[in-house]
Length: 117
Image (cartoon, rainbow, N blue to C red; front, top):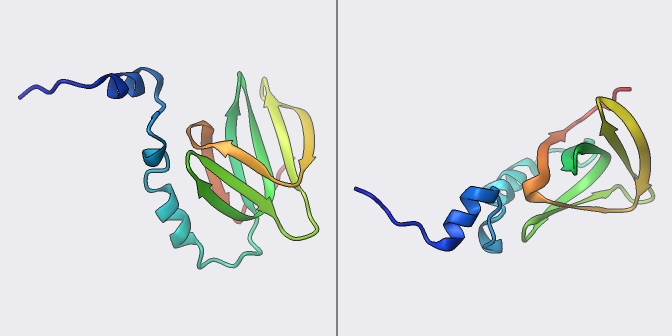
């Protein structure tokens, strides 16, 4: 049996990105809900693609899925640390109050992460 694909499905296969925002998060939201029983004091870290490099954000306390994005926030009174990695080395370090990351750029989400230099 063969199946014809519509234009949106073909585009998704070509680009790896689902244009239908309702389906972006897949089971990610369910997985995060399952993790909500963990203590909020655990450090949440997210690694994601950024052009030819990658970034890793540390010290998150709350995480939410909104459409095709992950929103990570630190504990009250704290900031998130963002490390930019290029060529296998830390190229820059930034601090921010909140970060919004496209789901299709995420490489990993770590719970209870420890920062290593």
